[in-house]
Image (cartoon, rainbow, N blue to C red):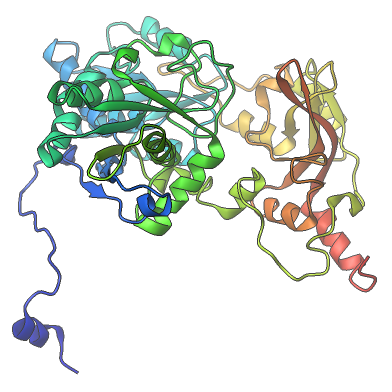
Length: 495
């Protein structure tokens, strides 16, 4: 068999790979100039004849479009003399802008604190801490906490707030938008998600300045008020896009937007998975949201053959390995059906399972000390409000986690855990629920077992709705022990 050297001499290179021989002084110099990649499969699969190009911002060095902002916002602070030798950076973030700023801080050898909402993935937190940042993950009050940190140390703290700093849209006007023009010249439709609004406002305006007929489409998750402040607010599992507070929309320029497509969580995550499977693009849920919006907008606006559509793919899958990348996570949220398996118990309803334990119900007004007293013989308790609605769950291990990993503001002494805190302040994050009256009927033991692959317990109950507000009525908690007991004890009877 001929070796590689012989083949190379006889046939030359079989692969036309782009070679980049430039030398970079540090990783920040590689930010931007991301590839613009044509989608070959997805447009056809969805009945479109236009050309769709993906601006692959997830290929920035720290993994997202926010790397551009991280470099630009720090450079701007340097230009105005805000950064001193003893300065430290503080920023509110949904994760990606924080990672971009933390990357820049690491290269500059500066301290950095990122304040974020608890819904954001643990992968983002781990990446931030790996870059040397201090991370505060809060249930609420991100903006207020950032201000407090600045007020406590006004001389050293440099506040880098993407939501109010006009460097945010400007960097996309100067770089992202210009790169698209350099690659394609005329763009007929531009699609981007709107979080802070910097990307769509800046790059969208640049493309309109170059071609006034360019249609700018905002991809917005259900429940966001980014474009329409009168929308009914509701949480979304897609991270980094959408807004629920008008105070966060200072740099967003709605006048740039010509059309809006509202995309739900299921559409977003299924499209992100389709991008990986059919185009080889390993991108996040907000990228799926943007492409789903592009498909809908192209159909609604009759964007046909010969037209060019550009979609921004903001970040990659690194931040979501335990979320939509996981089949079980998708099944737990009913975004996908569980696999078909032949075990005798797989399709049986979960109502047949006999529960081993009766877990206590704790009122929202209870303290952690009171909760622990009721959990003497079990590890889990359900937290219920005065209407009987399920608010969350608490476990001894979650309380241990909060007690041993307290939230600490910069330059403050770590505080001991206060067991007199209301139990609602320390709920288990991301509790999984299955409704006996769900849209797909009574859940099966197969589905339950799949969810238990990724969580130690599942809350069982009933969905309810009142005055356009959804709630969940608690019934039971099931762990893997009960499932195993059912399979083992009934293996000969096969109910």
